[in-house]
Image (cartoon, rainbow, N blue to C red; front, side, top):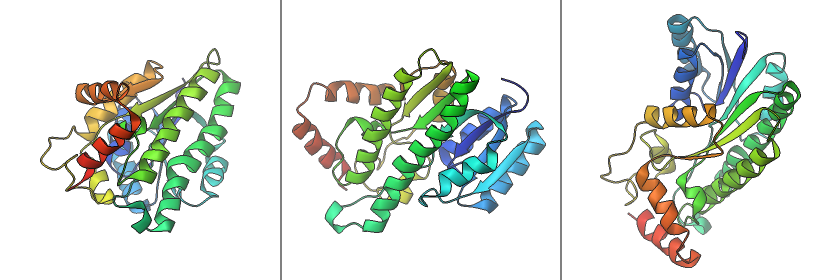
Length: 258
């Protein structure tokens, strides 16, 4: 890594993405912050520049738009992107047949298509240079079918399978891929997904975004393939491996209900 290295973070305007930006900045890594809200990004950029004396680029993009990943890459390809953090993503709560189709398709575009495209663009450059690290934000939902969040959990199943497979492909290239799988986190995700009242999160003490961000950052720096945050989350995932898939889907359905 050199002084001109950058970390590109999508979904950097809040939650885990915002905290990861802080962590990179404390380690004197320049930032490329991507999100839909330019105002929020500019506020963060000013804070980071003043506090840590780093360089910060701001890119206002909606990753649901098919052309967004290519436009982002073209804008920053002259910079040394040492770290790519695919943090942007969102979910929705409710019965699939009652959900908004456009929102479902936008979810697929952000959670899968944009993540895949950005990884393709930057991993190719990283492999050519012989170094680089990629962190893909996933979920404990990637290990299960998720009734009432069917599309979201399906997209996260993809992220896990893709990240693990690509991680193996990149062995001996100097580039690593880490898939971070936290459980419910105090990040604003639940409010946006409209599942604040589900048994999964209601009345629960959720881990802070910074705790998850630190865990993911450390796992990425160690080159771990998969990083599952929280003992309880790891235990649930382990137990799920020995349960019939149909039973697990019904269990998730029960926990998702209000």
